[in-house]
Image 1 (cartoon, rainbow, N blue to C red):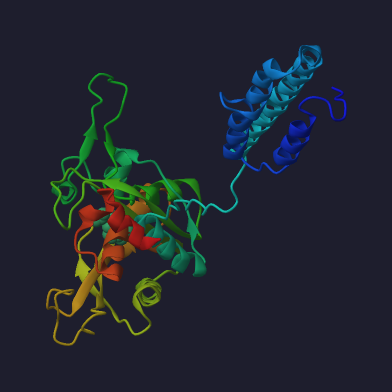
Image 2: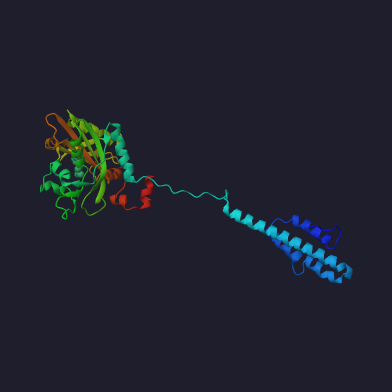
Length: 349
Ligand code: DAH
């Protein structure tokens, strides 16, 4: 638009442009618009004043005043658009000054933690590690472990049976009550030397209380070779006890019965809290804490997998993983492991 110098309203136009250049926000722009184009605004007044002019000037003055009005209307509108798009941009862009959002970090489950600790001790001693099926045949869970059908020794394990009544081709199936059936599966598959641990889930038909869960984890161990003796069993498990519970620990081996070992043993450590002195609440005032069952692999079991017991001998052991964790961490209720309470679980991160 070209405006002629000193034409009607030109002075107002120049002053208004100067003012417009100083506008820095939306509020100032609104005010500027009112001052110029509002009911009592300077451009409105300028147009009103035309009626007072001599009639030969009215035409040009009218034309000029209208041009000024349109000029500022457009200018103000453009500026409004600019502010609007800036506003949208500022919503979409990233505000780097905002504090970051904390990421929730998970942690290993306490059972995983203890399984890793146990595995580490044995792998450092040269053991391999394997896993096996949680749904197991009666044959492996019991029979091949020297526990025949209807033998009273089965009462040692309360069993969750899988219902196979609809399919007569299926052999009796159960949720494994211990990890020991993997001893058989491993021996059937390979020839000695064998040195392996088997961590995994086990199941019992059991009412739960502070020391019993219907599902828990065990770690089985098996060593078979020529010339393996009870001395190997003792030194291996004593080493384990010391690595797990402190180098001062003593291990105690007392006779116990498990059908798949002969002799069988209950392995205890002297209490790490009272050092076995006068007894305390951790060791039940006995000075000793039972940590696992063990023994020399029964000759019948060796024969069953085709090993000659005159040539090969071995030892086996089995422990409850949660029990080891409870002892190490002073946990007094096994149900905490699987009740999904984050206040408990987070303590192991
Ligand atoms: N399987 C036994 C149980 O669940 C524990 C056990 C005892 C495993 C002696 C062994 C062993 O390998 O030699 O009670």
